[in-house]
Length: 354
Image (tube, rainbow, N blue to C red):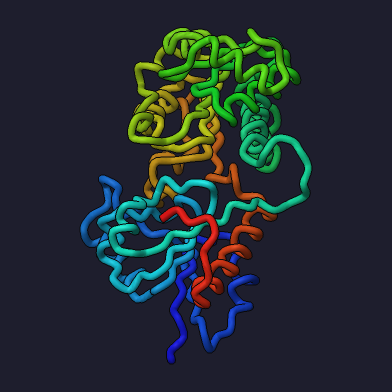
């Protein structure tokens, strides 16, 4: 019998190969696709690009994915008649339309153990957020480039965080954990807004994180954007939150402020944010997530020309690295291989999403 064909998608840094290479080649034929094609369900994706993605995936009974790097809407699943198993990662994957898998009888199995030492503390996304905030506030990327290319002190002066106001759009797990750290480390005043946030819920989150009730203040949407020195997105992407933050919100922000998004790109109207930064209406931004990932070669984000000729805006970009710690990635792929072997033996599959 011919070996089962397995596609490993979007493993940019090669974490998967040490684990998938352990599979018996007489049973499994593994093919790696480190380059991500345009998403099937994005408004800008042409029919020819959709067909290209289908042609890549159609031969494989088993597909390994990493989070939402390649979305699988039901329309795409319908065009993959050979698909028998999808391996994914994380507690949820919003890029998967699970109804499409259920309709086609395709099990979806996830890996949720992040690996690493069992030590309490901020998770990788919170750490990345803090890194981006500090780098944006202290102009690290611009100053590094200046020194390496023969310059010295250029651009905006460093931005002090002590005693400033932090505005969190969303006050769930990540919103509250970043707010706690910023309050404790820099004595920042914490404000938060989301459509359903009340002061009672804000107090519950503060107490849950070991802080007195009243440490987090629920404010109106307008007040958050108008008064915060740092505005950060910490809400989940859903149809309700897609396009939640618009140019109207961004126009309220102080020019000397920082905007950060380490959540999901489509929560913010991307064209509005780019316009604000191009005009230098907000002096600093740090962005880890985008509408289309990886960024197309012609993306307007791929430029150093921010804020006009006066350099009145500094933009720090990272390629969706919030959750990308080595221990996490390796453990996820190790678990994917274990799940693949269980499936091949007809055993019960743990952590099924569909």
